[in-house]
Image (cartoon, rainbow, N blue to C red; front, top):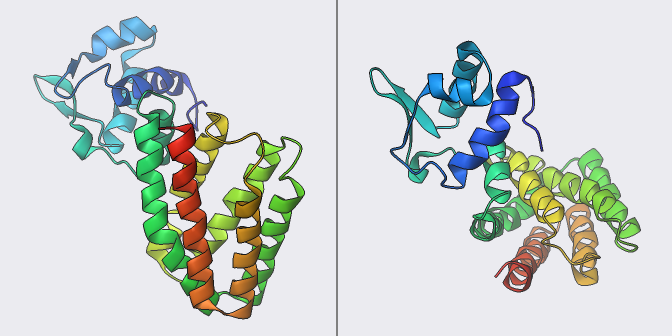
Amino acid sequence: MSTPGRGLHGRVLDTLGPAITAGEYPPGSVLRTDELAQHFQVSRSVMREAVRVLESMHLVESRRRVGVTVRPKAAWNVYDPQVIRWRLAGADRPHQLRSLTVLRSAIEPVAAGLTARHATAAQCAELTECALGMVAHSRGHELEEYLVHDVAFHRVILAASGNEMFARLGDVVAEVLTGRTHHEVMFEDPDPAAVTLHVQVAEAVREGDAPRAERLTREITTGALQELDVLAP
């Protein structure tokens, strides 16, 4: 997938970003912008723009008289959707999927409980619509269509929680759901039990049953972790 706002620097990022996150340039590696500009056949100004984007993700840092240095993984902005996308595209995919799914397991059940307490009528209706969309596309290998409703469902859960910190994780959850589908870490059709759980979560939210919404969402995330044991061990 190409970098948003793509231009010449986007083309550079599409290659250099995944190479860094895949470990082709280990931490401490020094990247010479002049050499990279020549390698990618772009101007130095384009290369500097690409480096600025990588710096904003904390993947690299520029040092005077040294050059552009690759930072340790611990320094990376691992919540950046583009960094997640690059990591999911590389050999780090199983670890990244598991790490993100554990994060979901910690956050989403609590968010669902809060959503049951705070969701508006419009948000309840939107959640129900998303769940029904998932049901409608859960058979016949319609994973892309299913994904649209799945992502929307989880965005509503996080946003309607009333917690702005949870809401900001919507892009993170969207990336892990999208990456799981696009990299075929999914069964040919979604697990029927998981689809039913989404419908039940929507019902619990609509009824204002916070404990049930939290418990059911925990079942969803536990199931997602179990799927990884089979599909991305």
